[in-house]
Amino acid sequence: LLTLESGAFLERRVLELAGNRTELEIPVLAAHAPNIYCSVTVIRASSSPEAIGHYRASGRIPLVVELPKRRLKVQLSAPARVRPLEKLRIPLRVTDHPGAGVAAEVVVAAVDEAICMLTDFPSPDPFRFFFAPRLPAMDLFDIYSDIMPDPDAKAGGRESPPGGGGPGDAGGRLHPIHARRFQPVALWSSTVLTGPDGAATVELDVPEFTGQLRIMAVAVDRESFGAAAGS
Image (cartoon, rainbow, N blue to C red; front, side):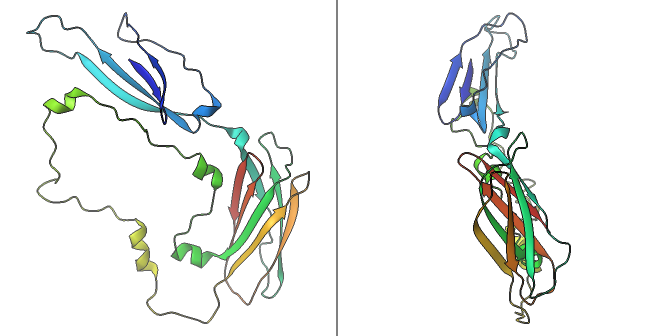
């Protein structure tokens, strides 16, 4: 029994195997993005009631479907250095998958890199967010678990130690004393429209600041997304 699943059953096939392996073709559709799941259950007839052997097997694998035409490429170009109280000029260009310029709407931000590190802030990427792999909506049932004992909830008589590196560890990088020598720098420019060639230029007023800025850009058009980041 082979089934294709996403938020619902997409397809079901009942097959008879002549040997211990076979090869199947599955049509790939744009509606399957970002991924679907293929579940297989194999049942073999028992040779005799007294015989002990393997008569069932089941498993599930994800089938990842990529849509490169839905991803925009954003190119950023900024000077290596800029002085305080000057304008930061950021030329950018948005192109589609073949490389042609695209008229898109872009949001640009320049944030103090130290703030991004302290808060563990990842550069935004809408394509990665909307097309991230999704968990299966269907449960895979198998009677084999009913005849096997449940594993102990604890390993070695105690809870397994955490591995670390989670969001809670960010507090160790925060200083308990607030310093107000400089104002936090977070510059923002929204609704930047590129031309038919995909090009545009953004200018941001840099305040009194010494440090490194992370420049982030998110571009969208009617059906596609894209992002870029640099320092």
